[in-house]
Image (cartoon, rainbow, N blue to C red):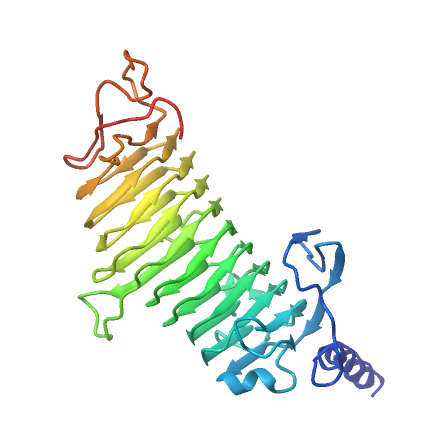
Length: 370
């Protein structure tokens, strides 16, 4: 009997903070500026936002379905009205995971177009016998959402954006998930300044635009941007490919961009897998991967101003019709194994660099990294 009383008291104590800090019970003021720094990535109970130390408070998983749900109690919203100038704020929570079998998102927002921000939350999912039970943050049929300065660990998909447009993910740290950040059948989303560390399959993925071999409705994933992100220590398991940045099955998609990212110590730095078209890879640094950049099928992709440094098996491999330089400014990529010279000192190699795989050529190889 005594044990049961103790358990009830512990559960009540964990639950009380999530009630008392909800604005519909009392006012709660947080720093409206966004400049947070992780103090401890492993436990991550304390962050510094601006000049203010912020303690994350335990909260049960959050599910919001429709705009009206933002104003209900126990939904984790601490302030805001859902407008562009005053978005709903879900912040400073340490989410208590589900201990039930099945994939349960720990923060799940769906069917909304109100403006909201998920900020400075910590999510560590259940991990039992090498099975990941939870998705971290899941946006489905959502517009106008932002995810900022969150730490997500040990999830099936750390941050999953599905059938959603005009959302952003910034300054997040994703560790040891199957998929770090996963964008599926979604357009006009931005992933910026995030770090993906030690994922099993991929750090950042854009997938499932239009796969001609499946029976689902064809929805493009177009005009998504991945920029200033770092993906490292990602190797596939059980014959599954591992890639820092992974694009797959985008037959009717266009205009995706990978810009100024760093991928190192992965199986693949960047993998453009099936039916990848009209994608720009610009300003990236790919080093010490098994394969720097690999293209399988697609075409009309533009790849320039990148640095390929000491990748172990291939710097790059491309059997398709892609462009490996910017012909307008006559500049290509930097290759650490380039054996040519620069007799006129213009910073461009005298002879082109041949891309393994077919007939692709970097006509203007850079002599130093961009």
